[in-house]
Length: 236
Image (tube, rainbow, N blue to C red; front, side):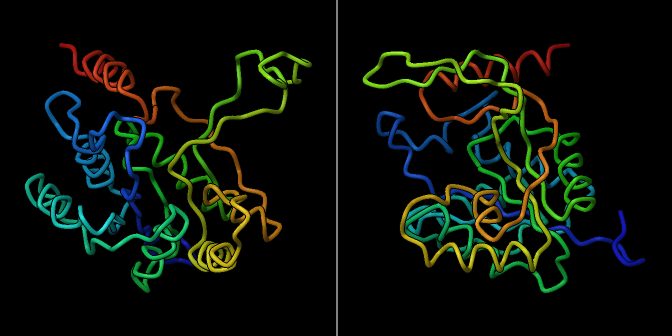
């Protein structure tokens, strides 16, 4: 992949600053999928992708050394920094983006809690990011969607143009930096990911078609689902 006749430099920010509040007290990034910690799966996916030039982890202060040790154990040689996160995901990602290499043309942000991301999907998002300046892993909504009030269905929402959005989410470095810089000054909670930060400055991210198996570890049962997918992928 090239930009302006030179090799493209893509930085990957691994967002690992979550509190795992819905995991019954367990740090979900240290739980194991196929005997390997969740965060290690995410790191290994970007380490093995030949389109990624560097990796930066953004983490809670109490986990900085733990994640650095895991990266060393799994030989994540592309890791350049482990950055202290902020009070919100937005601030944590912003802190990491500021530390990306000056060589970076594009930056991908990936939730560490999505351990099943594939090389194919990473490259799809990178390709779409280069073509459209910003893109995000996504899936078209297939379930019926209801608008609800007090737990009572009020109407059925037309799902024709609805997509669920995952990570990685990528953007031109300067574009992403500017969007996040503006977003951190907002306090209304409307910026929940990189796409919404870009949307705030009038940018429309491209929705990349990616695997439905790119699930996020949020609840305890997600670990069982992730293990089942992992076992299926590695079944001989």
